[in-house]
Length: 303
Ligand code: CP
Ligand code: NVA
Image (cartoon, rainbow, N blue to C red; front, side, top):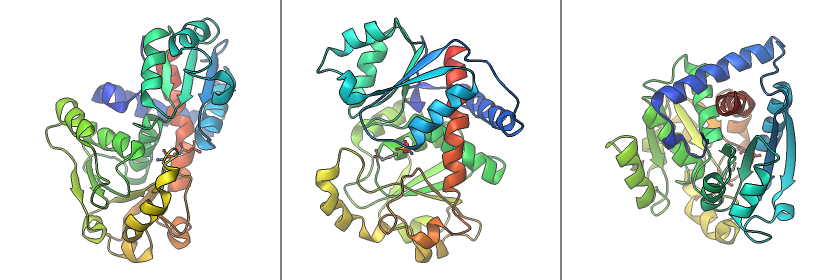
């Protein structure tokens, strides 16, 4: 039974396969070539947190492949409190062919994947966001022809999105640099996992965003306060103040540098309007790529 829980679980070959398939599916979509690869399959989407991109891109992608999706709000399903994760997983495995989950605690995904009998896809947890990471690398490949050798400077929090992208970069020959305030870098658990399973060369962490972007092919940012961290918002606004991706920071990067953001953007916080709406920003191309990347994941798990 294959799952899609963390990019670190995939080999370089598997990631390369998914990227190639995502590009093929994108081309087929552009040329309106019909597909029935998920015909007769039903995929459930259980979301404990809000979403625009993940939910809609999965639901549309599943429909385009001839499958059916079923949205199940987390508060109705009651993962772990209405019934145990194992009872939920064993029950729902009878009805569905795969399950996409967006959860607060990553352990919820592990609990369902290990007790159910259908593939589980991580649609974001507090630990990682592998669907995002895959779409991010697809976008870098489109922007530069190849991702190999490119430098991504992530300006912001060492969070779920940063972890997945760092792993993807490590597997596919890209450099990943994290520019963050002291105390908001990658934690020891991630360092141990990365060095054991990806590479002994752990991504560089710096606390000066201006110095960091000098060699950037891509500047990447995400919200300073992730879903579930709302109580820390005021403190984070203060700590991240000098890590805003604005015209001044972008002017310190090479002229070919692109800007990515997983979205939703908190304009005026981690990124300014002029950068979001400027020519360097490819965040909406990146958002579009979520759907193609996830279609590749669904076919990989279900075909
Ligand atoms: N980037 C992303 O996952 O967006 P949503 O939270 O809208 O799904
Ligand atoms: N780091 C953000 C990503 C949102 C797509 C969060 O977890 O809220």
